[in-house]
Structure formats: structure tokens, C-alpha cells
Amino acid sequence: MLSIGGGEDSYSLSSADDAWSVADYLWNNFLGGQSNSRPLGNAILDGIDFDIEKGSSNYYAALARRLSEHSGGRKVYLSAAPQCPFPDQWLNDALSTGLFDYVWVQFYNNPPCEYSTSSPDKFKNSWNQWTSSIKAGKFYVGLPASRAAAGDGYVPSNVLISQVLPFVKSSSKYGGVMLWDGYHDVLSKYSSKIKAVSEIIFVEIIAGSL
Image 1: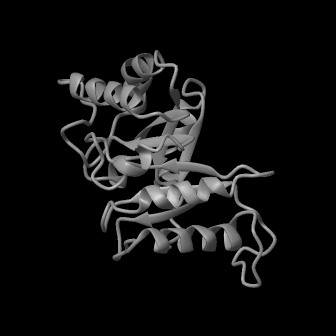
Image 2: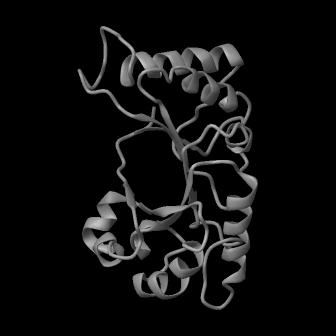
């Protein structure tokens, strides 16, 4: 998956036509299309991850629809990483299309819906709202891989295993755990500690913004 957006720099889509142009560019240069300037050579990526944290929320739904239209012999997978306060400021329109296969909700740097042992209901209510309100394939609990990886929202691995996973895994839409980020996971070995009980783990790797 190629992740677009991020928390740095400035970016936005100016119109539906702009969204279509970006979708076609992504298809031809990173997915199953053809171009003379593919940055990754012959590698064909599986899909696009929407990590939208800036700009206008307009037209990201058009981007998702156009990318989905390219699914033919080879499916274009769509994923998104919204903030846990519902609805997400930038991604709600796109997620409301029902086209997304994976949604990794960022339950960190968002105190109103982060998990804490003293008030677990705010996390539970947010998780329930996401899984009941958005039509998507699977939902993932997005967490920092260490205390240093994010300002707030770190959940110790033993607490995740004993208190968080039993609750979230009761949902048929639970897909696994997403960790931010690869560098901190290497240092903390967080994914190794939860691998046996978390089903699937995705670790995000910082490679720049598109």
C-alpha cells in the first residue's frame, strides 16, 4: 500500500477533476496502470492508504471512487487512517462511500477517545461508533509502538492484551492492530509482544509524503 497525505506539509484537492487526475496518476505510476516514469519500477502496489490530516475534506470521496473504478482484473485496495474522534474531519465523506477495505483508526494523540484504564468507556464508545457507522471491510486499533512514538495514547502491551483486545475482538469487524511506527517498533518490540493474540499487525513505515 502507498500512503498519501500525512501530518506534514500542505496538500489538498481543488476539484473533482483534480481528484480524478491524481487517481489516474496513482494508478499509472504505482498500481496496475502503465507509465514511463514508475518510481518503483515494475513493482505493482496493492492499493492506496488515505492518511489525510490536512487540507479540505472535499473531493477525497471522488478520489476514492475513481481509484475503485480502476479495479478490474486486479483489485485496488483502499485503506484509511482517520483520527478516533467521530466523524473524522477530513475523511468522513470518503469513508461514507463504503469503498474502503481497511480502516486503522488512530487512537493516539486524541485524548477524547484514547484508551485509559481509569476511563475505558471513551475508547469503547468510539470503537463502537466507528464499527457501527462506517461500512468497511475491517477496522484496526491504531496505537503508538512506544511512549516515544506519540504524545499521548500509549497502551502497554500487557494492558492491550488483557483489557483492550478482549473487547475489540468481540466485533466481527475487528481486523487487527496498527502500530505507529516501524522505527519505534524495532526499539520496543511491541509487535512481537502482541503478535500471538492480535490476529494481524500492520506497522507503518515513514517514507515521506506524496
